Structures are given as structure tokens and as C-alpha cells.
Image 1: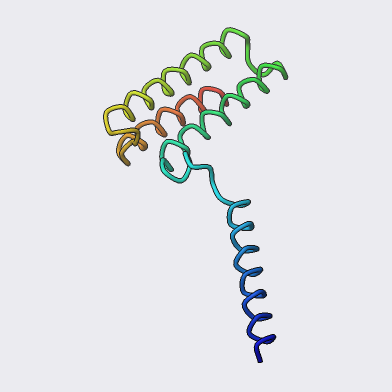
Image 2 (image 1 turned 90 degrees about the vertical axis):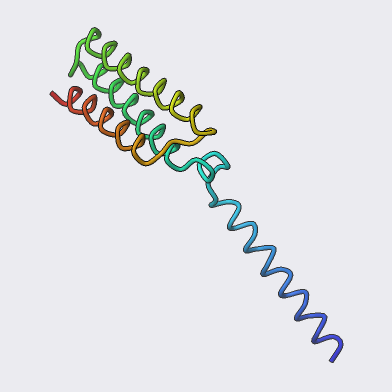
Length: 112
């Protein structure tokens, strides 16, 4: 009976350790977990930057237009950081909505 209890405790320990490792491996970064709105805005900016670079490389946009779009993204990123400074590192839903709207406008300018 003692061996069975010991075996059960060992098995439970392994299961718990395995679940902790699996959770840690698939978990978000600390920044993403504590600042999900900022992480979403920054992710969109990063994806948009890669799209601008790809469009420029493929000749879909001119170097001048690429520079203009990069400047607009830089302004949006600066605004995101300024908004976060006002609220202890976080942005509000309204600020996120405004930033996403501006990113969408830049995205539409890239497509045209």
C-alpha cells in the first residue's frame, strides 16, 4: 500500500511538472501578458513594417512612398508609447481603437 501511494505521488508530481513545462513553453511573454493592447498594436506595426519592406523590394511602391509609410508607422509607435506613459504603461481601449484606425489608414495607403 505504501508503494502504491508513493507511486501515485510520483506520478502526480510528474504530471504537474509536465503541465508546468507545457504551459511555460506556450505562454506569452511577460509584456504580452501584462500589456495585451500594446502588444497587439506593436505586432500590427511589425507586420506592417515587413509588408512595406516586401512591397518596396518587389517594386510595388517607390522608395519615397516606403519612407513615407515608415515615417507614419514611426509616428503611430511614438503615439502608442506616449499614451502608455500617461497610464502607467498601459493603453486604454479607446486609445487602442484610435491607433488601430491609424494603422488601417497606413495599410490602405500601402495597398493603393
